[in-house]
Image (cartoon, rainbow, N blue to C red; front, side, top):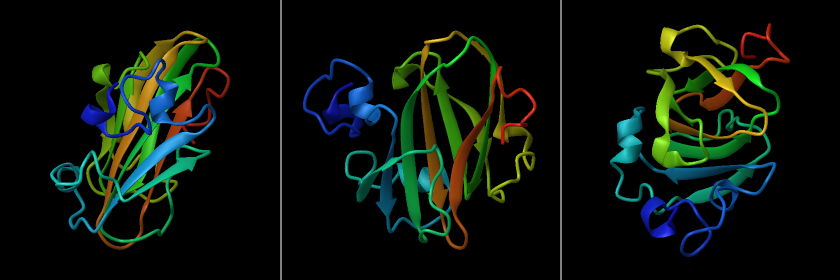
Length: 176
């Protein structure tokens, strides 16, 4: 990863591992762009400040964003998941407004694809409003490094985003 190309690192040049660019171990790196109208991801991605000039950068301890934080902002939140146990994993997102979840079975964002998305909004605990907000199931190996990224765009009104998952050790939680 190169900071000039992706705008997410607090580093210069090519870091020696992925964790340097997505946040410290045990944290999740959240980047926010303010004063962007609209409630669609393309409003965020077409901003002249995106992706190299976020207004704020925060470290989160959960893959969950602020609730009723502000209006007219966009988020890009990145993490490396260290798979805890071998088995089947399914991801689910909630968000207000449009929210996309990218996933790669490697620690590289270059291989990431959208696996779940919300076209408008959900309530914080509304896990089944849209068919597409839950991913297909992935077979992952213990110790495997996987890349996760949320793109989120808030227009006006309530706002939040969160990533939930079903795991081999929590198979009946419906991603909550």
